[in-house]
Each structure stands twice: as structure tokens, then as C-alpha cells.
Image (tube, rainbow, N blue to C red; front, top):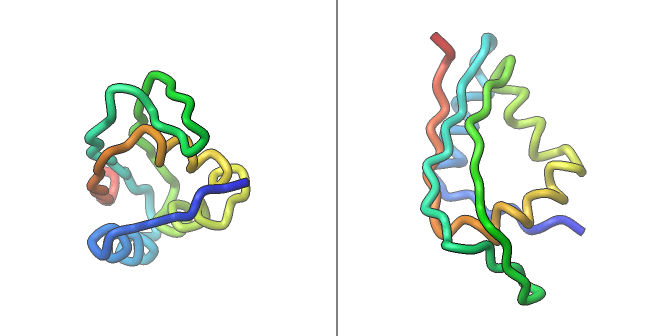
Length: 91
């Protein structure tokens, strides 16, 4: 059971721009984390984070079609109070 994906207009624009990058991209998530993850079922757990490196912008967009990623997204929603996404061609 996956969580609903809610992207800001800025994040959606960044993803659309990344889709046009043929080479490697770096995706940086700037998170404001909760002290503990807050799940809809009432449990809570410690939080962590990740920086991703992807072979192309299209590979980033493919995440949103991956059932395993969508299922794991509930952990992100539980842990993140706020976020901003930066996507850049790899240097």
C-alpha cells in the first residue's frame, strides 16, 4: 500500500526539467525532518535521509512508476515535515 505522492509546483518543474537531461544527474533533497517519523497508524520511528545519483533525468522520473519506491514513500511522508528538491546535471 503506497502513499499518495504530493509534489510542490517547484518540485514538479524540477523533475520535468531533469527529464530532458540525457547524462547523469544529482538529486538533492533538502529536508526538514521531524524528531521522529509520524505514521498514519500512530507509530513513530527515528528518521534518516539520502542524496541520489541517477544515470539520467528520465531515471528520476521512473521512480514515480516503480511500485517498490511508491510503497516506500510512506516512510518519507512520515519522516519529512518539509522538503525542497534540487536536481542538477552531474559535474
